[in-house]
Amino acid sequence: MNNAFQKIALGLIVLGIGSYFISESRSPSAFIPSILGLIVYGFVFLAGKFPNQHKHFAHANLFVFAMGCGGTYKAVPKIFCHLFCETPLENFAPIAQFTAFVLCLAAIILGVKSFVDARKK
Image 1 (tube, rainbow, N blue to C red):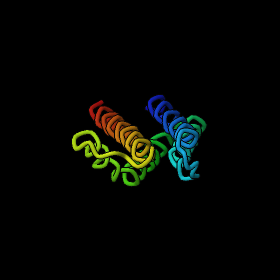
Image 2: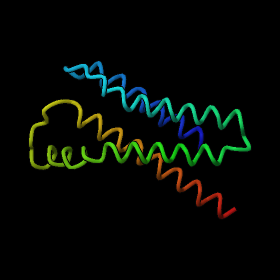
Image 3: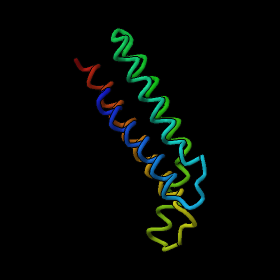
Image 4: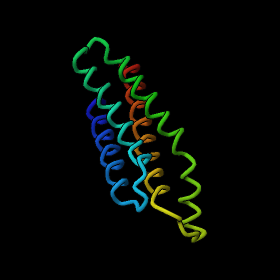
């Protein structure tokens, strides 16, 4: 699971840095996905350092991903309205937020699946 969390964290970091340079406003809030990714990377690093505590770090990562979903879920209707109602987007932010939402949601789904699989063993 740490491998999947590392890849998703890397995706969040790249998303934050990329959205900062792609957006016209160059707002520092574009780095929020990168901060989430760095926090997850920190927990993955600590899970490697303290293998007997890896379950706690996995739960902490899922909490961070849940906070990421909670902070970006408002972009979902904007994206669907843009796709189906052909409403123009004002800027790049809803696209970056929706991408962060999808990455965080995928991490939560993978984490829950891993927890369920661990209970079956």
